[in-house]
Image (cartoon, rainbow over all chains, first blue to last red; front, side, top):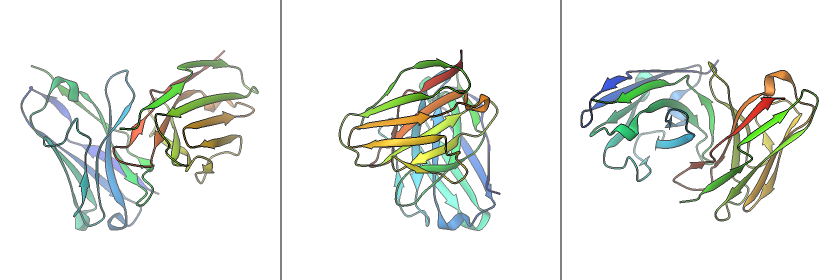
Length: 119
Length: 107
């Protein structure tokens, strides 16, 4: 059974940093692209980052480019999201998701972790 | 970026009825549209990808159609567990973008 479990969320002040983790199990982690998708309170879904199987390629929307860094450790079946220079608009539930490599949809999701950016 | 316009925002229906949710892309995305279901306390669930391909485990009462810029999710013979939020997502190009969502409520 595919499982994705996020951790590392919490309350952080604007301008500070936070690192999220996602522990994957139930599939061969190194064979899949992985992604982060977020959802602000009472809002829709927003794709945040994608990383290739080896980690050599990463993709971001303009809203987080230069501030967020996605990474992975295939030996630990773990995905990470380093978030720097956080803004209030980054407040959201962050989901870890398995991405189908060549076609970009997300076939499994975690339950999500809440990040609140506030002073 | 490809803008995804989803309609309606809200939809009320009764078990046994059929409903349709629409998604319009700001430019052609070929067939590359996915549909997801979101319910409180549960992981988001992929229902359909590439416009009309049912994800394994998706009941056959769900169907997807469309290509280019206009897509539709149809749910026939609604079951109680079908009520929730539905999102479309274009998976044709980065940045991937989602529709604003449709809340399917019990009438």
